[in-house]
Image 1 (tube, each protein chain N blue to C red):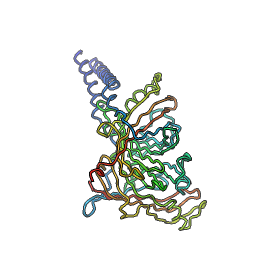
Image 2 (cartoon, one colour):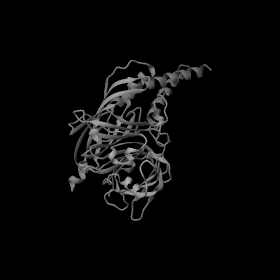
Image 3 (cartoon, rainbow over the protein chains, first blue to last red):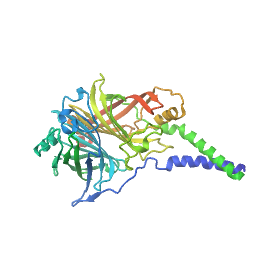
Image 4 (tube, chains in turn yellow, orange):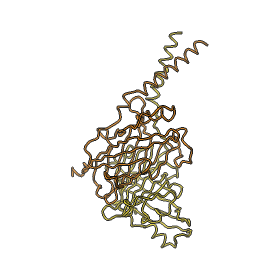
Length: 217
Length: 225
């Protein structure tokens, strides 16, 4: 009886410690990567954002245009932060098959000294990617929509495609990464396809981010 | 039957003893944190007053937290969080905006390294540019002191200070990459510290002030060219 008791204590003690050490407490559900190998080396992967479903929140200067002014969940920034156009957007991101796989933050600023766009994509089971590009012109999406017949305050349907980072440009780059993305370098393109705007200014459409990466380039 | 009762009792006592060992485990308390070095720059924040947005994945919402329809419910992101906040300079002037994406790290180990969280920052200072920070934080010291207050009604011994940054740098610091503006091409390190100033057991909420210290320099690639 005594032997059983002490053996059970040892097993309980060792079992909990083993669980604390060996159980993958921090593991995330991973879906198969929708990557494809491309000619002459490297791999291509598309990330997709569906609007408005995948927009988490946004903060920015009203001068940044429709995306800052009319988005649901928009936060106003302190006046000290917005003498120049600044837009911070947060999204869920999907793979090419449409499954939500991670989160993304996009920072855009168009001031004279520090203009640029930076994306951070985090896929919990795989790591994070940093993408950078020159900033698109101020209110570029608004301009394209107005050209296509959109008027503020009224609903609009159509099909407008705006390449914020056009395919083939050398300036839109994969600038860093972690874990599975560590050591990757390459290019990306970013295309916004807007198929509708509600009378409140909410955007409907998709954002496609196409990356082409290889190790150590 | 008596053997079964004795064995069950023994297992429970052994498991409880192991939990006590984990709770007081000095390895995972020490496995925190880089020591602050001389920083080029320090930015401060205050929670919750400077939070612009905060979303917590469904699986990491503390039990008992008032329910709301969370956005991060998909199984691939249910153990993540997204936080955006304003940061101030030394004169408390709003200076930067940061997006933080957090995910429980696969390196979490209750015996050797603590509860690890991958913490990715995108931080923009208007007029200067954007930085990308990659940090691994050990949040075990925070959890260890907070949960008994929230769930067991134990008195809080705060305010308490934490230095959660535990990697991935060589000396336990976060790694920084310049993304745009004058930061493009720069690399460096960063350390975060925060001071918990209030705990609300009913709302499962906290108030804190925090600081992120950076040190930036030319990238190693640029130097070798």
